[in-house]
Image (cartoon, rainbow, N blue to C red; front, side):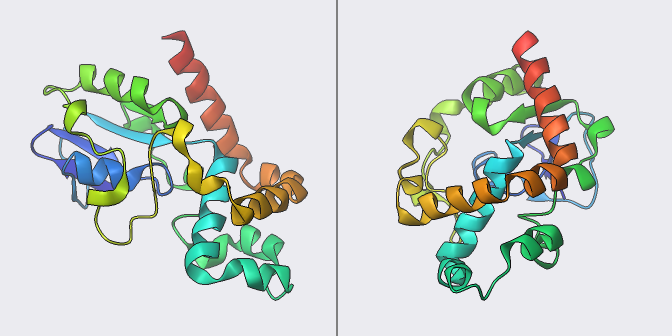
Length: 194
C-alpha cells in the first residue's frame, strides 16, 4: 500500500510489521492510491523476525498462545495460509514493487538507514522529533519500541514460546519466506557495502 508525504515530497510503500506505524505516524504520511512523487522508499526486516512479531501480535491480541498450546490452531496451516491473507503475515516479496523503490532500508539497521534516507530526500527528516516508543502513537499500534536493543516485550514466556514454535517450524518458514529472505539478504548486503 502506498503512502505519500507532501512535506517530504516522497512516497512510502508500507510493509506491515516493519516499523510501518512509526514511519506513517512520525513522518506524517497519508494513504494514497498510487505514488505521486519521483522518490519512493520502504523498510523491511528479517522475515523470520517478522513472522515472530506477527505471531506475538496474534498471541497478545487474538488469544493464539492458549489455542496453539491446546492444539486448536495448526500453526503450520496458519503460516502456509498467511492467516487468511492478513497483511501482517503475507510475504512482502509478493507485493513489494522493488523496481519502483529508490531506497529500501532494514528495521535492524533503522537508525543508520533513516539517516541515509534523510540524505536522499529534498527535506531532511528531523530524527530528534521521531517518536521511539508507542506512548504517542495512534491506538492499536503494536510496537512498543523501535530500538532493537530495548525489546523488553520479547523477554517473557509468550516470546520464548513463539521462538520455540518458530524454531520447530524453521524449515517450512524458510521455504515459505524464501523470496523474502533472499530480498532481505540482498538489501542488507547492499547497505553494508554503501
